[in-house]
Structures are given as structure tokens and as C-alpha cells.
Picture 1 (spheres, rainbow, N blue to C red):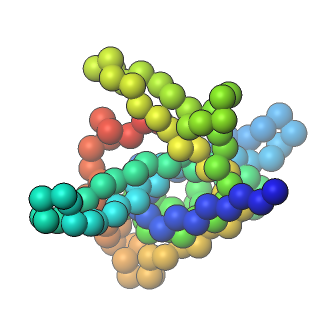
Picture 2 (picture 1 turned 45 degrees about the horizontal axis):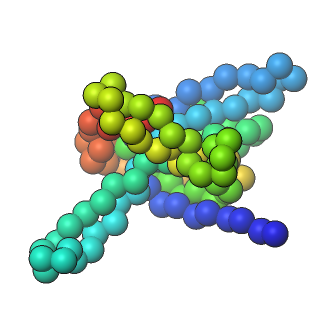
Picture 3 (picture 1 turned 90 degrees about the vertical axis):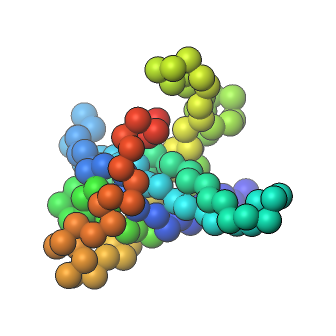
Length: 134
């Protein structure tokens, strides 16, 4: 069996890094992807999907050093299902149910150019932290 997911999106907040008991670095961050499509009414609609990304080892250290909120990235990895094989389900503060798509990345490409990266462009593309499930 084989499973792979590829994403291009923007970081929703700055990455955080911690270390496993054996000393392996782990960096976590959220990525938002946008999809635009024509709705049933014929008008343009858009949909944002959030992913919780975990990266290990040397790649984790590089992500923690060079990525920031708004960075554009390409992620390749695998989906980590919840206990029942589906996305992890959780309850929002307002009581509604939500799902979290969690990805273990084995490849991260930084897509911002040098000028864009230093200027923190795209930082305001996804500003509402209230909608980030993690």
C-alpha cells in the first residue's frame, strides 16, 4: 500500500520546535490551502483547508529557522489518521465539531523568494487565528 499527499499553501503561524526524548527535533506548523471554484449559483466561491504539519530531523531545524507566518511552502508527506482512521475530530470553543488533517512531512520546499521571505509577504492572507484548529 502507498499513500502520499502534496500541498502548496501558506503558514498560518510561526513554526514551533521541540525535541523528542531521544534528541530528534520536531517542528510543527499549520498550512492553509485555498481552492477557488464556481458554485452552484454560477458565482466564484473559495474554500480554505487547514493542515497540521509535523517535520522531523534536519528538515525540522531548517523549517524552524527559515519559515514564518505567511511563508509559502510545498509539502510532501503522508496523512496521519485519528484513532478511527478518519481525520482527528475535536470540538471548537463555540461547541461546533471540526476536523483536523494532520500530515507528517518528509519533504518541505520553501517557495518564497529571498526578497519575499525577508519582507514577510503573504502574512495577512490567512489572519484569523480563531479558525486554526491547532
